[in-house]
Length: 337
Ligand SMILES: NC(=O)c1ccc[n+]([C@@H]2O[C@H](COP(=O)([O-])OP(=O)(O)OC[C@H]3O[C@@H](n4cnc5c(N)ncnc54)[C@H](O)[C@@H]3O)[C@@H](O)[C@H]2O)c1
Ligand SMILES: [Zn+2]
Image 1: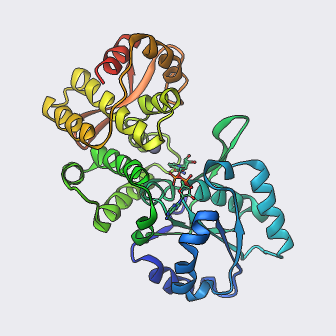
Image 2: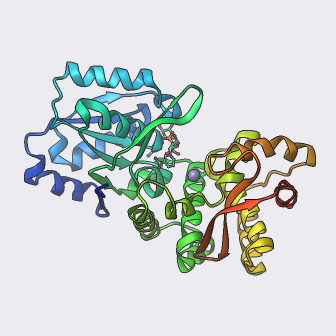
Image 3: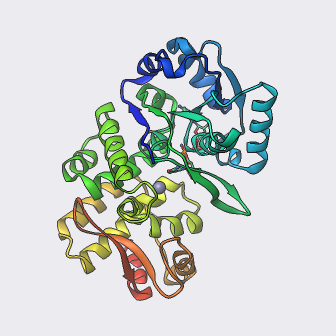
């Protein structure tokens, strides 16, 4: 799968890109939601001259837009507007808009180009990069989708100014995760720095792009990016925590098991536990609650009905995938939260 480019220079670099020959004469359709219409579209139009004539399609806010009904409405609008095979879908939003818009583009007229302009931190460092597009179907998240790389992903950190503290923390947890499995120095910096810089965002985006390039279809090496997610998904469902925060807690459990089973230095676990405790209030679970969460972990895409499988760390930057974890070990890790 061909990798799209990441434009680290923000909206101005998108404008430069769109002036190149391959984009001339294309019809641009910007997909956005109510929030990005208000908070991000004015800057997009002001700074990207090539999008002055673009048309816009507004979709429901958040996860709600990732449905077959919304996808059909977008296809219908594209047909009504006479969008041809040269048309380009520009996704201006968080991971939800990027997931929907990428999938809509992947299927319209057998596939047209799309560009991701992520506006949440989570989308900038994770969702917008890597070619995974999907909607939710049959009550299952991301159950229908396709691998389809964005022709370009534009990083414009100034969009983050209007995000809530919780949304920023969610994105930061995914950044810490990516750094933990790939770049110990960046990891140390991320848990030490009180604030995030555009440079941090670029570094994490680069790592994600490199990991995806090595394993675009998520068959082996890319699985390291699931670090903290087997526990995280169960915590997200059981405790109704936002995804990023649940992954933050899930990483604590995974680091604990890494120490027990994979030889991770105790100091790494202690430092993470201290940092996490300083950023959020941690859920605590009784044995009874852990018993309820165990089936959720067995249903996780990486696990089997017999054993839970997760990503552990031998050391920072050295992840091991598909490690079998017994129910007893899961209980131990969860009760240690
Ligand atoms: N494709 C992938 O590889 C991948 C990876 C991770 C997550 N995801 C998906 O991403 C989605 C979550 O993405 P998300 O966390 O970005 O949430 P989101 O896209 O649902 O957006 C969350 C909220 O933030 C608002 N928002 C967006 N930009 C804003 C801004 N600049 N200022 C203020 N508010 C803004 C949105 O309108 C929405 O209300 C999930 O559906 C998840 O499955 C996909
Ligand atoms: Zn995640």
